[in-house]
Length: 494
Image 1 (cartoon, helix red, strand yellow):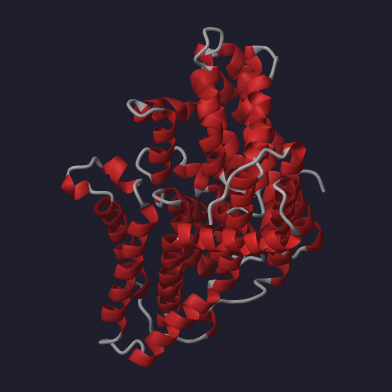
Image 2: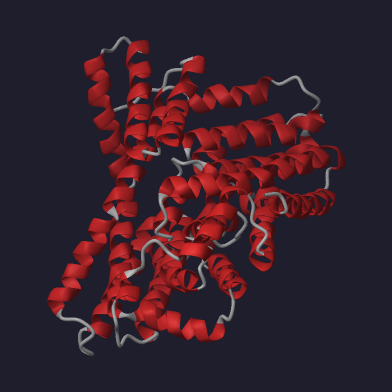
């Protein structure tokens, strides 16, 4: 079905507000998202002369459309979670836990290693969330690091890292939005102005080293230290003769083949540059990598008797089945984003504040950061947000009075987009981070929100300074000092 966008004014922000408010109040995500989607369709139907019946039909049209648009993502997640289940069943996770436990002597080292692994897997944020969670969850459980803390570390080293990594699908997406000819060079110049990504990474390592938690996260950590994990993975509940290679080899093959797969799908071996190739259809390439990991597991486990062919197939089926609940959340989230972006003009309404603002131009970066954050939080997508805002920002900065603000304004656009995506309960990255950590989704949202928002507040100060100084370095120094001081102060409060 063809969807035609109509502008509905302030009504366009109601669906995401309804969905987010219901999710936070009821602690139940599925019905909250569905009600958000349905309310958006009602607004669209009534504004275009339709009925409740037509609105109901369009809900499922939108869901079908989003499933089609994200079919490779669904295939990738199903294959990846099958590999995850196989690795767990083989005893590889347990063996890796024993190996790491001999080398990681404290909660600090376990948290640091988790953060480092999150940074090393920078190609794709969704792949990052599920892989790091699978590998590190048994270890963080042993050192009594809460699932909420693990989910935060995973989430904070996913999108914030991908958005500043030159070799990633994100870099190509941003570069293509900025400029058709010199977009990649501009992307490189934007990196120092992406304060949210840089400060989030700083905060993750600072908290991992010092253990200075605050707010709901501190309560979660204290509960974990006192009571231990609520549930254990299959690898922790059963004795196994698994070896470290049973985990490492399928994961390493998956990563290498995922990178090669993205390059292959994008035409790298036909002469296309690597950075352009991996951004062409990254989820198709990731699916090839996940399939390679599945084949590797078969060759590694069956001949050595780690499991029978029947057990192997059962693990695949169980793995795919376990991803169905978060997949349903993803589909509903995609549908809500589609309603907001494609039908009722949520992004157009919010971004209109940017182009019509009469505030001094030096305030443009901080204003754009706030607008991007609101858009991304309400729609649960960073790509959709910077995709709508970057053209507007570049047009504003084509004027003589704002030309010098192009880089800080673009940096603020990306930073605000990632902040909203990072803490929004309907963001696919937030959902995948809680899935990878095996943490209740609402708990992850509640514990992460104060951390992400603190970084965002400090970022706003940084963009206020950058608007007047036109350099990122003063802002980074000031914002880092403010951030560390705030964490120390808040962690000391009961």
